[in-house]
Length: 326
Image 1 (cartoon, rainbow, N blue to C red):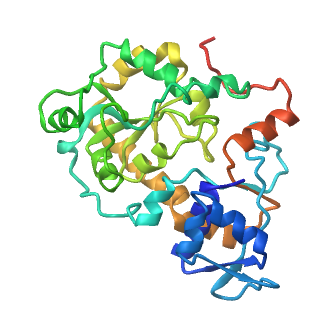
Image 2: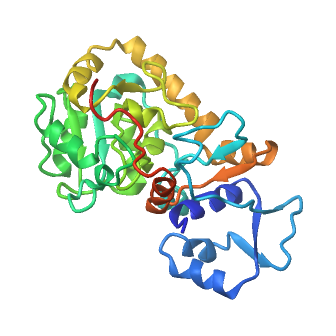
């Protein structure tokens, strides 16, 4: 059920020196081995199967994980001692060791005062967010269509045109790179993100959270993000602190105009805050430390569409967020 998110969760413990114990089960081993994103746990020997599973100084038995991720997130209870495991970088970032490779730490003189994103915008999938009936957050496909009508949009015909823009003098534009243009190799993605002051935090397919936010924040790129999406982070992303937040899609053009008027000093302050947020809440060390040192009655792990369905079943007709301007 948890797929890619379970791999990242287990990998985090492995990176912090723990061996994760699972109960011995042929069925569980078969299930893990059959999934594209959980099978790497077996290939990389991230888990040990034992019966009964025992926790020691170097091993840990995972606590029960709840896939109903949006419970206590969309309707938080004041008495809830819960932890929502944050969105990670893409699992292949951790699998290949790209997640913390040196990205150069370029000075701000080399960063474009532009908004960048590299990702998929396939119309077969990326309009689904609005159809789920849970989030009033603009889908990635709708955002793409709005950006293409913007005077700030920089059309890219191929990857060389992207690299020419990075090295050239033109600035204050929005660049969205998808497979039709060519995909930036994952190994080089964080370095490319580091060349831009801002990342377009477009949401995922069925739920808002997408790996692109964490990948960008790991190199200090500031999320340009819709308010109802920013509010889902724990702690939430704050406008002009660690994100540039626009209220709704209808304000996209005006928000972009205002963003491009920010001073270098404002951008530098926000960049520092973004890196601080990432180090405090999004790294493997931060996640594992919180789980090891704090007591939680409930630990929620994303399960993508399954998480959305679970919350919708409990809250039929419930919708959160803004979606359209008041």
